[in-house]
Length: 158
Picture 1 (tube, rainbow, N blue to C red):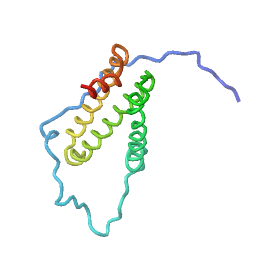
Picture 2 (cartoon, rainbow, N blue to C red):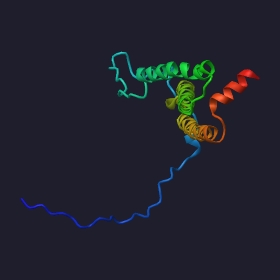
Picture 3 (tube, rainbow, N blue to C red):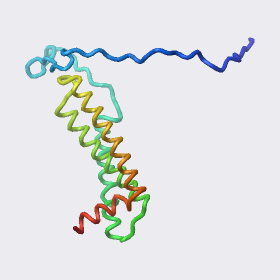
Picture 4 (tube, rainbow, N blue to C red):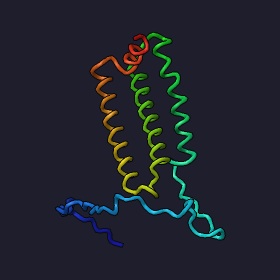
């Protein structure tokens, strides 16, 4: 058995432009649904969705853990009277994740993909962009000001 090693460390560069999807007016219309969204007959076997750790019961468990973790982090600066930057950053990140998960649940419930198609994808993309913009805003608050706890404390005492 002879092993041969390649001495070529580079690949040819592809100058292809990314595929831009062609959209028509039909893509923006709502998809027709059967009455009551009853598909098939009574005798058809149920096909469950593939398990995914980011959706379903796991999703609810993550939300509960984050919510329980936020409770002491919100109260700690007021009770102890001391503000720690690390606790402040963790609280801001958990609060942002909590808000994103809540808005994502609203989009999934009220703008379902099977009915609204491209509008669902647009709403999810806007949520993702808003989340990243909010994360940058949290970074600015943490670095240039006294942090999120100080803002909450000033609003509480106002």
